Image (cartoon, rainbow, N blue to C red; front, side, top):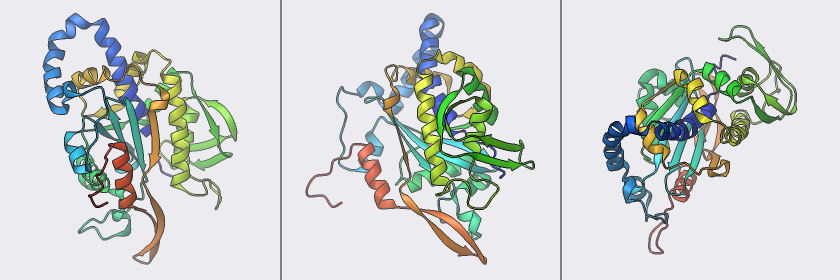
Length: 331
């Protein structure tokens, strides 16, 4: 297995927790020095997302297209890389009014028709980054999710996973089965051996837990492949959120800042921070892209794809965006 790491979990927390809440603490302790810079930043971000026009009640919309144009939601894609491929993709959307985060895991084998790219592996979403970079991935994710706007991206180095997790004393998870796998050719080499059961994993073991997909023996590993791995990652993330909310979050920023690549500006993070002060672990909701796994034949090879369900995705996004159709509208 050449999977480099599964880092969307730490990237996600770093963005929505460490930057937001940590930057808020930083803002409070350095208010005078930052006042002039933040003032300029506020006018930009408030104009872009209409933050000052928010009301105390959650807004409703008559269609997704209207919601995408008028909603104050902040949408981010979080990428974990395997060389030139996106091994992990998550679409995360934050509502500054309800202070709720919805995160949709997108399987790396999700089928995307790409004109001019006819080889089987080229039709998987994880191949897009190598050809078109992060902008290409943003377009693909937006297409799959019915045209939803994507405002920012985050990519994180695997070393940041270990450093951040060690800085909070590890994360407790329920390991679903004995995870055992060796691959001396991987970079870095893999020698995973994690016993089944509830336990606290340090940074190194957490990284191995997130990297694990299958064992060396046929039939070992997650019965349902990437979907099972996604569930384990989401379990890890929920536990990580619960623990990080009780920590001094600037420590997490210090540990993880050097390992993150993002287009989020510091003044943006500081301004966003004011909207998430009272967030709790229950405010994070995780789900997987609606669809099903299918086998298709390309160039004489049988390949596994994840075929997304556009109708179910639309229903999911309508629920997230609080779309309420009238009785005279067609579904």
